[in-house]
Length: 161
Image (tube, rainbow, N blue to C red; front, side, top):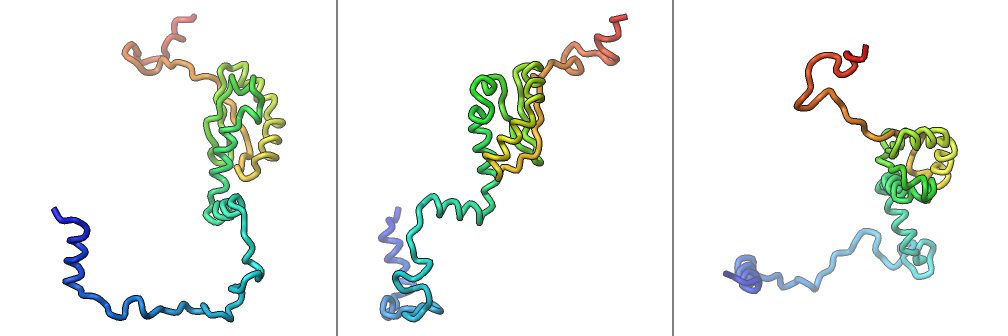
């Protein structure tokens, strides 16, 4: 097996060395001493905090909305309170609608009554999340439509009278 040094020597033999390498420097367009903004203490040369730089980067790359959505889901307990958060779980935000899965239909109904207040709190705290509505779902119920003992027809309702 060849080492990196062997590979380097082989490439050097094939391509040779550039005697002027390191001596000439390419000038970049506009990189002179008279270039505006290149002097110390000129406007735009002030140091910026890391938080400001990251915020600018996320805005330029269009990451603000996905980050705000994930922050909302992470901070659900702060949005609705600890007790309510124990019985509800945000699933995700799709097309401006936050979907929340609740432990019981009672909790889903209670949260539906509080929808306006929760939505207002979300819009104030996470405006970049783009949440325009909230959908509260109860727990998943078992279905009798599929499974090893299913039969075609109306199902268990047909024997109720």
